[in-house]
Length: 265
Length: 255
Picture 1: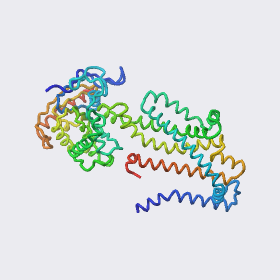
Picture 2: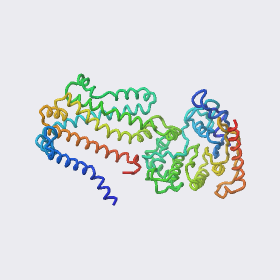
Picture 3: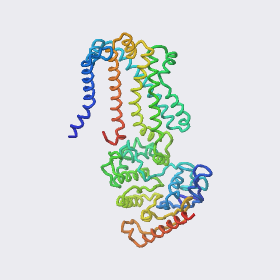
Picture 4: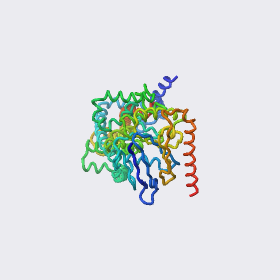
């Protein structure tokens, strides 16, 4: 398996020299079709990493490549989802989910002529996340969990090669969050797109990911990599498995240590 | 209970107007206020009936001038708003200039406009335009400039162009701001037209009122004011209705 996302000594400094250094010498490799999670103390530049990989922010040093190509501008076909669902309030759920199709080629060209086919696809995705029957509702008529599920559909409708998730379940209650882990895992196991999940929830990272990158305090860099070899599909039962608990524990200790060190410094 | 409540809410403005008119009428009658100081509502209504065709003729002209000026204001305001809201450099350059322009009392501009356009309709239209384009430009620019960066990130990482961002997110998002500014602008356009008509015109409600004033026909003046007020409310109601129909999502289904 080849590396799909590669970061090679990446630096990021905001606001010119003398500005905040968000990342310093970050190295990271993610294989094609892999589910990667990035965890770390708050303010360690996890979200900056998202912007770098997608090409929204250029690095101030080092190299980033995705699918064998160096990233020099915004990538064209990434699915993204944030903690805030960012659905457009003037669009109904179905047309919110179909938004990427109006942008990404070749769908953009085909959309008006093959509308029916795409509508079917969007309905199928909404059904997968249990939102059948809500297609003609506005997002603000739905609960936060439902909006976040629709947000996932929007991130996936155009079948991206790369899915970037920035604490997508952070604002949800524990039950909804755990339920959506299962939903996301099901979709991922079916389509196997490369995924980067930024989170501060270690159980979430361990439940979903094949590989977990632990970042240091600012300026952030990857200080440890954990492979999670638990069998899939993982269930909530898995979270009580000794191997699962051991992984969560190990990462937690590492982060606690980072926090101690950065306080002392 | 609920529907009863709603009828009451709908009836409230009328109840207030009727009670004001009753109090007005009673005070004029009881305190024997002379009609050249403050005519009673019935006297105003009588004056309206008497001069009906003249009033309607001038009101029609005022309405037309206002609408033309307003249409120009919408076109220019929208365009300026889009430019300022989407191009950061234009924002830094034009915004302060616009603010400066807006702080000039527009009455002071009428003599200049007269110099260019002469006495009559073009001046009224220009004044209406000058008064009403500003709120539209500022509101549209605000709507466009305050798009959540995360939404933009989602679209940019799909390969969206600047134009895509404006048409898919910016403009729909700016619509509630746009309609809110229309309601302000239409009333300002009336103000502009009537100001120009009182200073430099031979027709229109403003001119009619100046004439009535010089001849001490006070009830006629009040009839003119009443007509302008009704025109203002009528056009406001049209845009409020459009706003509700087209940007109901911004109210999250309330109202």
